[in-house]
Image (cartoon, rainbow, N blue to C red; front, side, top):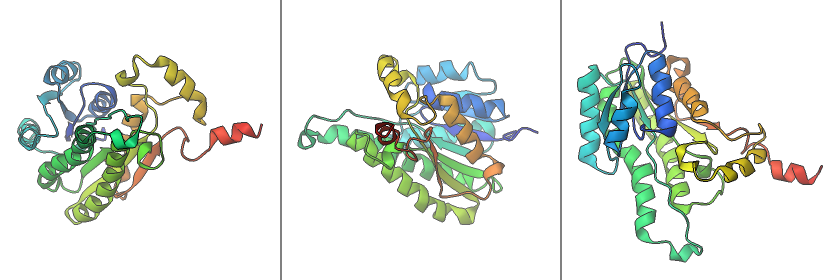
Length: 254
């Protein structure tokens, strides 16, 4: 018996990267997955390569689009058991903080934090009907815990961690668990033109490499499954030891 046999799963931002890897991992364990992405064509192309998957365009900043995606998942699978909030926006910082425009700040918060709120709000009534296996997994970032730049993105991810805790308390009586994963640097298409940066970052990580989408997908599979049946409101670091060990400091002592 696979861990997600009979499960219906909705993943946002699943056209590529972490979302795509998560869709593949959960599908490999028996789930039927709705691949959603703001780029509907990308979502469709990805879903075509995943057995049993379906696709739907979804802009998480649009309440109607979110509710349509949730309705599609329920219609397609007969139920919704797991929601993975993965969609993100990460704007570059301006050289001076005071020059940061409102629109880039708002875009990151609206996608990362409010987007997860919209998706969770729409999905929760269905997750509550999942017989105790309902789960929300939010994809956060180490930026929520320490300064790595990107003011708006970091604030949004920190807010998401707070939402994870408060929603966990709210959803627990209905048998729905809510947890978060905070990845470090992950080798995704977003880094495709910055391979030199990834190479430079690898020695900073105690485990000697940056992460892969499969690293995060494995953690999602754990938290979404019955193996984590007594875990809620938790944040799991998937960061190669970055936040636990000050590698740079240690290197100055050798």
